[in-house]
Structure formats: structure tokens, C-alpha cells
Image (cartoon, rainbow, N blue to C red):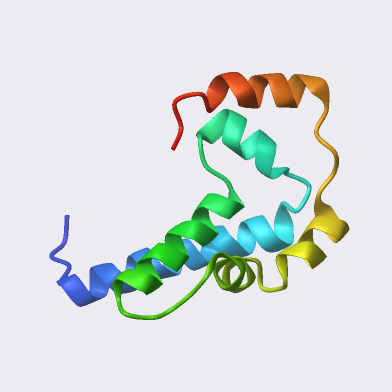
Length: 103
């Protein structure tokens, strides 16, 4: 692999994250958070929480709602009413089993 300095690595990682975020927010709004949790063990809310935690770790005060708005690009309630559907019984059962050890 070519030599990549620390700053370039940060830029690459940040760009990849932005692409993931854009993909989830623009191209795959049909994918529900519960399905992401069931398949991958994380969802948009996890990503927004991780952003919040990293901001807080760097001395930037950010609460859960602010972290979600930063990630979703809109207030979370707007996202929910626009894109989120009611989970069916299969999704709920899978979620319960998949996340029993998730913190």
C-alpha cells in the first residue's frame, strides 16, 4: 500500500463516512433502521449517537437530538414522519433476538 500520512487518512475516512451518510439519507431512505439493526447491528441512530459521543469527547456539547439532526440533516421527527414505517412482527422479533446483548 502507498504511504498515507495521518492527515490524509483522516480525510479519506471522513470522505468515506460522508458517502455512507449521503447514501443512507438520499439513496436508501427505504431501508429502515430496524432492518439495519437486524442485519448489521447498527443503524442511523447509532451513527448519530457516535457523532454525538465524538463531539462530546472533543469538548463540543451536543445532546441526542442535536446529534440526530446533524446526522439526519433534519430534525429526527421529520425523518420519522417522512421515511419511517411501522415495524412488523417479524422485524420486532428479529430485533429482540439480535439486540439482546447490544448496549
